[in-house]
Amino acid sequence: MMRLLQTGATLLVGAGFGASVSRLLGVRGRKEEEEEPGTPLGLLSKVPVLPVPRVQASELTVSPGGSGAVMKYGFPSLANIKTRESYVSSYDSRTRTASWVIERLTPASLNGPSDRKYCNFKEDESIHIFHRATNADFKGSGFDRGHMAAAANHKWSQKAMEDTFYLSNVAPQNAWNNLEKLCRSLTRHYLNVYVCTGPLYLPSQQADGKLYVKYQVLGRNHVAVPTHFFKVLILEKADGKGVELRSYVLPNEPIEEKIPLERFLVPIETIERASGLHFVPNIMKRTSSLQAITAR
Image 1 (spheres, helix red, strand yellow):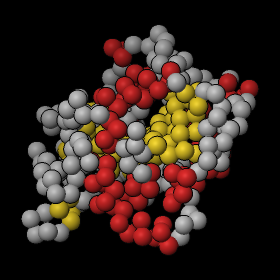
Image 2 (cartoon, rainbow, N blue to C red):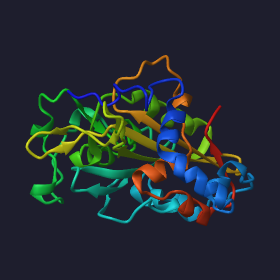
Image 3 (cartoon, rainbow, N blue to C red):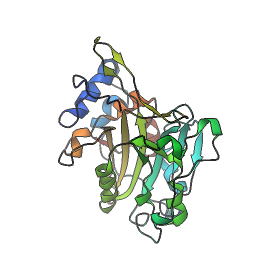
Image 4 (cartoon, rainbow, N blue to C red):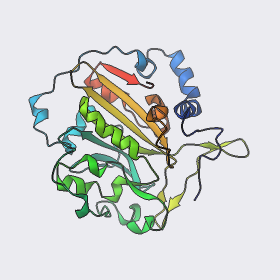
């Protein structure tokens, strides 16, 4: 199985990883931001923290973690939107994976009677048979069927948990369990934790010195193996005094548990540039109190 990060000159696992990704994708972007200092992306780190709007009673009646709750900050793209009990996604029929998946986590969504032993990975029959992944594609591949909206995030409803087992919510994955645990732990400190997860296909430098985007595909349906994954966290402070934005990029390979997740924080514009998605404009429509966290 091809390992795409063996050319350590470009992207590094662990210390300096986030900075390496930003340098690889952001040289031109930073120059443009310097020329246009008034753009929201260039000013993210300087946006003042102001009070967020109070939660409306209508928002409190939404099912814990239900798909209706995740629409507050809009969607990063509008292609092939799919709504499930516990999340909303945008499906990419070329890669046989989602472009992104959004979910809302709260203490209520993380607790309940659901049990994953009653859940099985299943094809998404709402997708044309030529454009969807099957369980056979993953068999013997060496990759996990990695949830983008994690099953453990939606214990509030058996149907919600079962919906996370659609293969349209799955991507070939090696490891990112620690980041999922972090997202759940943040519900103890924030009013709402909005999580957007998706695959990335980043370039790596080859022997000829040039950059290429290369990735493995699985099975007869050619399910794409991402080189990396991103997670964008929108965190509403429980005291109503602001919104935090944290954005991570992790390589799609095992990561030592002792490596702090803070090493994988990157500026949000790095993810927007690499994925073609847009997060900041949607967030700014709902609040002027955005604080980007790129280092701790």
